[in-house]
Image (cartoon, rainbow, N blue to C red; front, side):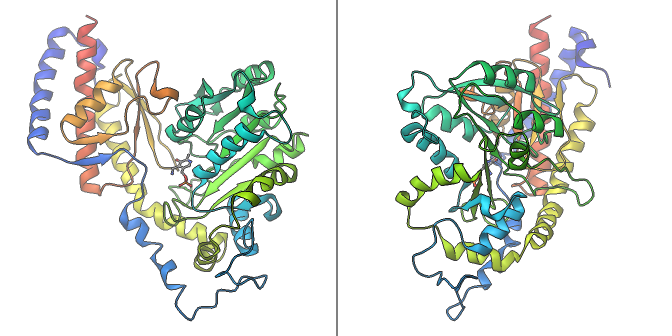
Length: 428
Ligand code: PMP
């Protein structure tokens, strides 16, 4: 296929008029499709319905340590829930706290506590003139929303195929005491689906931050979210790497079963060094008497162990893999070689990340919306919603049905072509 940049003005205008007809046809169909948020489909949630059967009015709700889960008691997780979540997190059960239903909530709390009370005896961030966070981009909008909410200055760090650009991370973190953290999604990152290389993770573990209270916010949200049974990424375990590097307190690791069982009704957990956990528990014991143990028990009885979870994830994969492939195959076929967009082929996670020509993303998303397809807002993958190149678009293929997704992808591709032609014509 001929790259658009090689086409004459006349060729582009002719192409534009054909594409506009196709676009108008789409508009006339009155579509109402949503590719904006990374939600599982209802078919995926059906996979976990068996969890509803493990409890009934005569069920024994006693935990492994004899605790009656119907009553108060237990701050940091049932022993069996710790075992299950720790094996999902690939760390030791004694290194985690099992929380409630949301890991994002735990991340928010972690920032909030650091603001008001400080980290392990260091000055509370609210008493400092300036607090900064590094934000690998493109990244997860809800991470950036938390740091923005607390008035923390966010600094973009470009992603590479191996993870965040570590030359930049090392330099900034070692020079600037105001930098207190970095948002990381180390496996099947949101939105690119990139897994950090061993070298990247070792460099993270070996960081020598100027701030004693600098922490890696290691959000391993997609740790078991593979798309293929035989092609799976594995990454180094960060708590272990930090210990080996003599930096045991450097990382907070977050995880949840949101996209394993039920989003909003899963189980979340945090992993960290004993010193960090002690510091956190001082707050936790004031904040709550304990989290939802019945939900923890329900998860353990349903999944049984990490093998049960992995098996379950392959059922998810069987549903969502064709959706990823549908979109990716269309992108390859329709946009490959045209020089108007770039994308990666993830083997896990929940998203496809698309980069348009510079200055086109907002217009593409607006054009898709006009014809009834909602995409994640352009810019959402950057701090403050500002993509300096206006080129990144996050595609979330899991929620729509295959038919809807096919239509939405066709329309998206049309919009990419039309907006790119306008951009090229503008520059001629
Ligand atoms: N982290 C990442 C990277 C996510 O993409 C999401 C959204 N699924 C979350 C956290 C939210 O997790 P939770 O439902 O546990 O709050």
